[in-house]
Length: 50
Image (cartoon, rainbow, N blue to C red; front, side):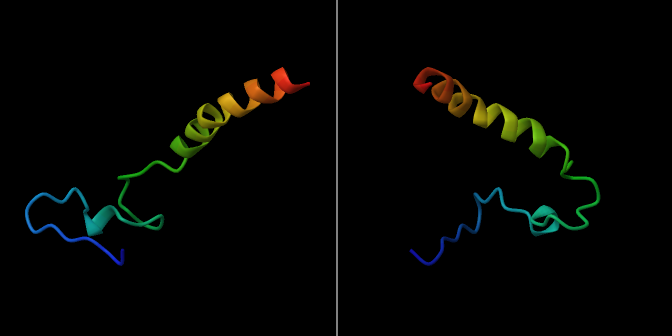
């Protein structure tokens, strides 16, 4: 697949589709909590394997 397009139902917004200046739409610090939460399952699995 090369791409998809939707003229009416898209949630994509070019104004906030960036990690640069998005006028506050995305808080970079949110990523830290997400990464820690997502990695929790891997830390639990690693403890079980020890």
